[in-house]
Length: 307
Image (cartoon, rainbow, N blue to C red; front, side):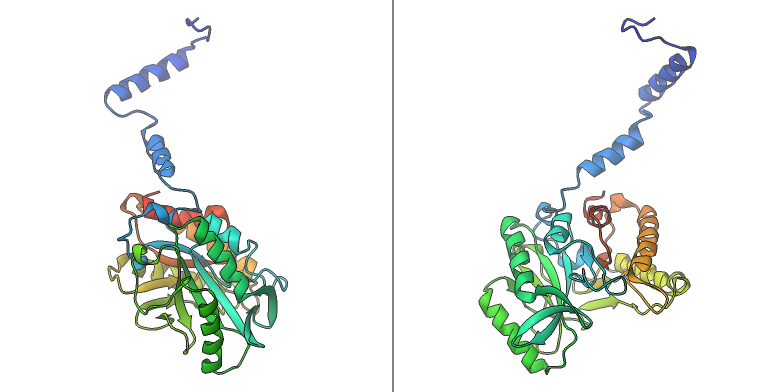
C-alpha cells in the first residue's frame, strides 16, 4: 500500500514508470492534451474576442463568423434560418450580420422574402449599438440588402440616409477595407443597394460564394459543399488585404429545407476545420451560417488565436 493508502497494482506501477521515463525525455503523456488546453485557454469569450486583437489587424485578414438572414426567426421551417436573436448572436461572437430590409412607409421592416420578422431596422441598430457601447473593442460588419420591396434605389437610399442621420457615428460607410483600429465600436457597412454608401456588395473589394438555391441534400454534397470548401481554400490562400472573402454555408431548395442544409453544412465545416493547422492561424474570411450556436461560432473565431 502507498503512503496515501491507495493500492498500487502491477499495471499502475508500470504505467507510472513509463510516464516517468517519457517525462524525463520531455515526452510527457499529457503534452498534446496540455497544448490543446493551452490554446483553448488563449481564446477570448464571444463578446470580446475582436478586442483581444491588435488595432492594425485588417478586417479582410481575419476569420469572422456570421449569420445568413440574421433576423429570420419566424415564418416556419421553410423560412426560419436562426434561433438566436441579434443580441445573443453578438454575445456568442458573430461579427457579420445579413440584414434584409423592406422599404415601407418611410422605414425599413426586416423581412425574409414576404415574411416580416417582427423587427425594424431601427431596432437592429439599437441592439447592435448597445452591444458596441458595452464592448467598445468590437466591430460588426453588416450587409444591408433591399428585400421584398420595389422602391427605387434613390428612395431606398433616402430612407437609409435618415437612419444614418438618427444614429450618428454608428455606421462606418467608407468604400475601403478598414483596420480594426479604424472601426472599433462601429458598424462596417456592406452596401447591397446601388444608392447606399460603404463597401460595394459584389464589387471589386468582395469575393462572394453564395450558391443558395440547392434543390436536394444530394445537390448539397455534390455541388454546394465543394463550392464552399473551394472558396474557403481560396480565402486561406489569398494574401490580399483589399479583398473581403465571404463564404455562405447556407442553402435551401425545393427538396432541402434550411435546417437540414444547415446540419449538413455544420458537419462538413467541422470536418474542414479539423483538417487545418490551427497553430498557423488560417484566415477563412467571413463565414455566414444558418442556425448558429455558441460552439459553431467559437470554432471559427478561435482560428484568429490559433485555437
